[in-house]
Length: 391
Ligand SMILES: *Cc1c(COP(=O)(O)O)cnc(C)c1O
Image (cartoon, rainbow, N blue to C red; front, side, top):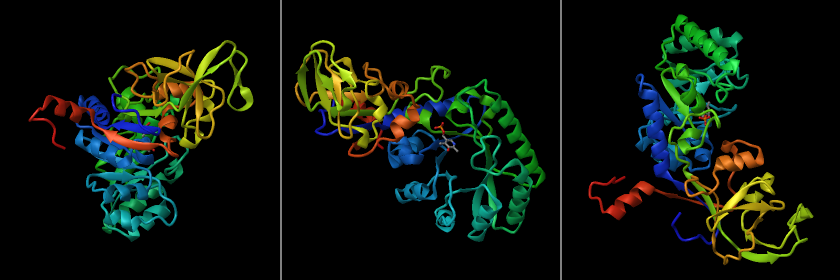
């Protein structure tokens, strides 16, 4: 980051990185045929900003956007999004009528949900079958009844079944037997749907990991979330794709100070200096969604070096080892970023604290501000390229 160091901790999201990743994924799935790409922007775009991520995705050729809840889908519509849009996590009492009126495709797991949607139809509805995740979706025993009811509603003009889909349990472990079993079960569901007279426009099963690792699971459409943000859906397994992390989290150093051997750091003195050193104070903490597990495990980037976090993560701040240096207040501290400058990545943080990169970026909040930059647009300005992008 070359921008001036902010006064407060901030999240910076490069929308050009999201466009870049979406183009890579779109190219990947269309090599062998016309597979559509849904970019999943639920949970505020995995912490990257739902509306901005959705715009970047559409710009880069996403055919669909996907979100969990009707509220998320309505917020996208309110922000001006008009393209194909699916949501899949509804609760009793949700406003299906508002979703249908806004041209949002909703998902039915059960007969009760299907009837509720049909009552506010004509509605475009997708059916979710549980093929082995044992989470949402119709159980195997209920598939035929759901398909028959959907066909009857369709014949009466109350719904149009536009999609049938499912979700994988172990797509980040390509050799896990659940993958073959779920794909076979999904194919059986599609046969039963066909026998019931349904003819959906799209069938889909793959998330990011299956998109990258399991071409047989692509069907008509893939639903990619994490990979669009440039994070690895299956660390250690994913081939090199050139994805670029879109998020940087950075903060100003509040102060630095010398410590003597024997000085304990932060609550409980879980770290004690065994030699003279110096430490710096960084003004973000677990109230910002920085895991408390980062205490004594994760590292940050200060003045071109990795600096380990010392002692416990506090609510509002943490302490890093500056190895005897005393950089001035306001020095940039990068918690994580794309990694190409040497700074840690969200994946590094995930490994340090024992979680997955999804959680590292999605849980951020508290007092962090967030802004969006466009590294491609900046290049165009610098080159004064008259034919540059104008979006
Ligand atoms: C979140 C989600 C996805 C995206 O998964 P990634 O692993 O982030 O690609 C796809 N499908 C469903 C149903 C989801 O809930």
